[in-house]
Image (cartoon, rainbow, N blue to C red; front, side, top):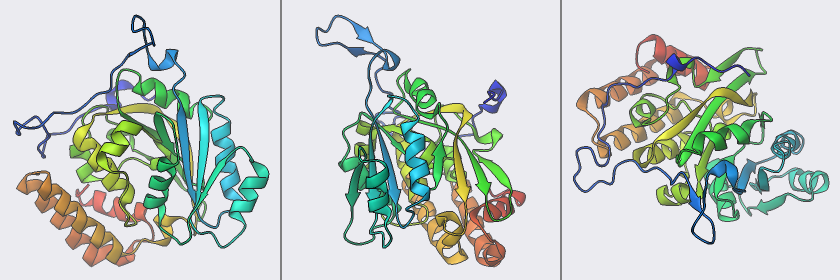
Length: 319
């Protein structure tokens, strides 16, 4: 895929306090060591010169056919993905049996009752051993260079990296990209993430250390991914890959389509406001979130999807 030009990288005015900025006790944003010592301690090698173990975590529920395509795309990364953990979230179909038959080398973790996508990802990480964690939703597909590009982006010492996701709406044939070209940011991402979640779990990589430090994903849904990214951005800068690395399908069974309504969106924004207050965001930023809440209460019922909601608020200058 062609690279996007450098001007797509940009920063916004800081509206929120970061650790180490206005807090004398803060540690600032953390970056991973860019090189590692060998056993003898004399030679230092980069991520690309050592066999970093990548764990792919796939949460799934009742998608016995489509999840096989996701797994296949992870296996197509060559020898970069050392283990694939599929978390079967109390499926009532033959998902577990289909995965076991098609890919006996894949590790399957099952839940006795439904726990949701966030806790399912956490469970997958708990059962993984990799130094780098990459997530893949069951109805998404990684491009063949997905892991290579994310790992290269992390190589200078980043604990987290993300790339561009192409979203294809199977209901109307439309497509769009996350992030949009003007939201591809490398470095401090907290301020922009308070405006909108411009990342997708399936196009994201994080070190085990960083994942454990922030406590993983929240239990609520939708929005568990947004708050996971916020918690990470509070502590770490992100590397950005200016290429499409994931294909995401939106359909009637997609969480982003199936669960969108103004009540759930409103609850998510109230949580966002609390996060903003806890992170010492400016009154201007909190007022903007209040305006998002009011807009959603008035017009949210007219939105058919999260993308409709986003575009409506973008048209009003709220995101």
